[in-house]
Length: 106
Image (cartoon, rainbow, N blue to C red; front, side):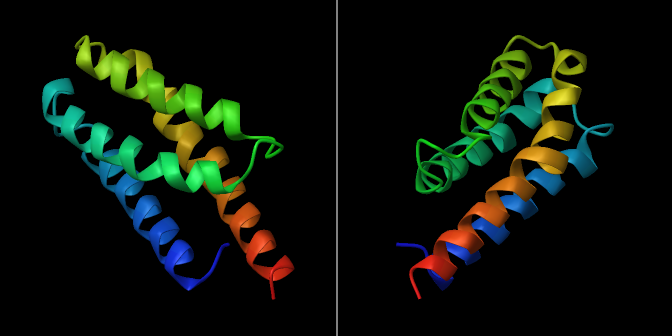
């Protein structure tokens, strides 16, 4: 079930992604890593709510994995597109999916 609690969690997740993006040029990979790990942990349950048939599920999972992996390996420049894809493609699609699911359940 998707309700206000899940939509608030989505909003907080979006804020985490924007925080990473805003600090990208200021922080190094090891400083960004805890933010990315926290973001990934918060994203997984919301992504699961999207269901297996949600079209961006695999893409979002891959972007989350690459973000964490490249930052862990101190290759920040290799995952710049992943954080952008999360912000501009995956998260908006997840937001629409959660809203659609909430609407269906009303």
